[in-house]
Image 1 (cartoon, rainbow, N blue to C red):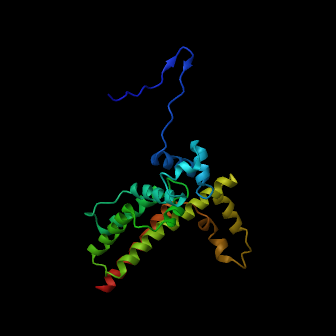
Image 2: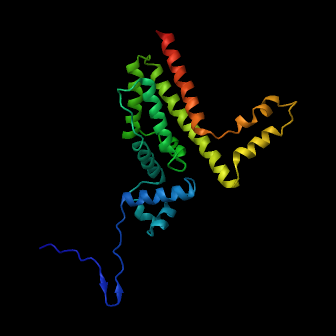
Image 3: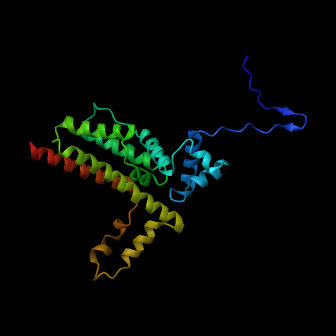
Length: 233
């Protein structure tokens, strides 16, 4: 007859110590995520993760190969949270929603762009996103040679924008001041005879209206795709 596991409870001497939580992959990944949000990607090491979990570093390798493996898993987690639009949508609207969903998800995690750029393995969620983009372009009639190129351009736009957005926000937090006002002043104080356009456009150069900037750049990109499609027909 199998033994029944007995869970600790209150005793006359007080509460019994809680049972040890088994080490498994979800627990390791949660620790990695917690450290990522507080410290950033670069300082994290397998030893630090082990210390965070209160275990020996060697015990981690039963579940994960190394830090790169954790980065791969984190990349898959991020991709899994990006909702894919329905294929019944207009092609431009579908790509716009995908790009916005991708950006919104990337912003949830610190150093998310570095994580996405660090892995190139053909993982399931990575392949699902590539397939979605290829299908949208193909169904609209874009030439086959252009489909991978345009898909990559759209992905790169989102990653590049979020990377710059996060850098500016982080710099603002470090300075504990309004970065926009600081940069506006830096540009507007330049010698006007030497940099007339920089001085005149200072308030726009230092703007941090990220939502409108992202939407505007995305529209320009989609307009370019559409113009190329019409030129081929």
